Length: 154
View 1 (tube, rainbow, N blue to C red):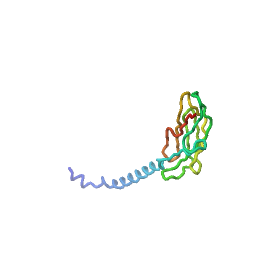
View 2: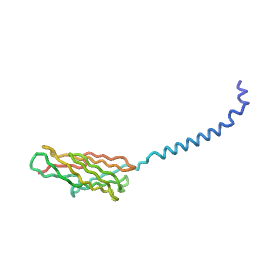
View 3: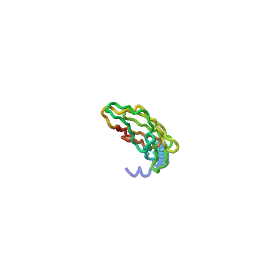
View 4: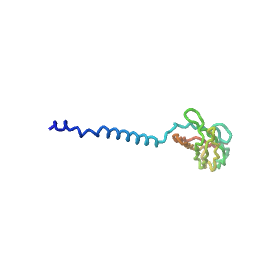
C-alpha cells in the first residue's frame, strides 16, 4: 500500500514552487497592510503658559456679590510639545467648560493663542474649570480637566 505512493514522485513535483509563491505573495500582502497602518509619533505634552497675560492657569474675576458672573472674553496661551520637547506645529487646541469655549492651532513654536468667550460663573459658584483637548496628526489625543481655573475673588 505505501510502496506505491513512495514510488510515484509526480505528486511533489510542483509543491515546492507553489509554497515559495504562496510565501512571497503573503509577504507582499503583509507589507502592504503594515504600510497602511498610521504610525504614531508618541504623546503630547501640553502646558498652560498664561491666562489673560498672567503666567499660570488661573483666571481671577473680581466680584463682591454671589450673582451669576459673566467673565468676558480672555486669551489663553497654550504650549504643545512632543516627547522630546520639540514644538508641535498645527496641533488643534480646544478649551471647553464654565459655559464657554475657544479653539486654535499651534504655530511653529508650538504656541496657540486662544480667545475664550462665553465663560461665566453661576450664582453661588466661586470656581469652575475648563478642559483642554489637543489633537495632532500622528500623536495620541491629549485631554486634561481643570486646565484653566476660573475663580471669583473679592
